[in-house]
Image (cartoon, rainbow, N blue to C red):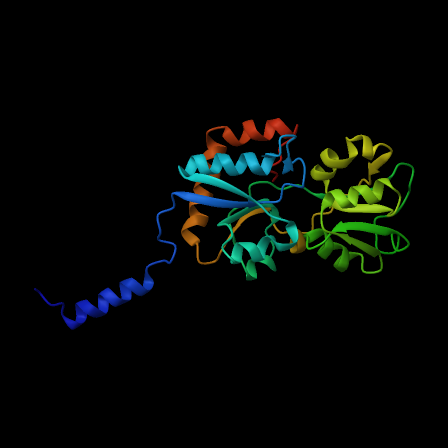
Length: 259
């Protein structure tokens, strides 16, 4: 048998060390979704998952030619579950922010929409820290909206919730004065429902890039750079072939991809 020279052995060792850990062949991708954030994710009457995020996840798997498994996960534990390898990626309207990028990696954005306040119809309030300091604002815990309120509205009392649906319930029952959340999610999940009758958006858009980032992206473990690139190529593919636009048209009457 032929023996490798010292130089060849060194080269081989370097090649093995530098080979990306994610060089595995992806035939199946498990995707964490929330299932409680309409119109992006929700439960159908039969218990199956639906929504924009879910449809996009399935379309991306098809574009990558991999089997897709959806794993439902509460928002509070969605990043820890990714790190614990409960699934391989998160598609759950997660904003790409510097803070989150310390622990996970993100693809390019797949949509971008502004945040807004919702109040009871007829309420006149200035959208400033001083103007809203006497209000109780409901926010989903662990979101960029909570970060935004803490940094931009430090004197406003926050009430934190595990799910967006819980925020809507307290708003409808009068236990809070306002909601801060994604404008599209609130329009479909609250304003247009019977529960949201008599509630309106305040006029301002809230979209500070330092807090909200550049849009919603797909989160992956930092060790899975190859999977990130597969998703990026798949996003480009479904936008180029019209699949993205067909899915978006089911849920929105505007360009949800954003600037």
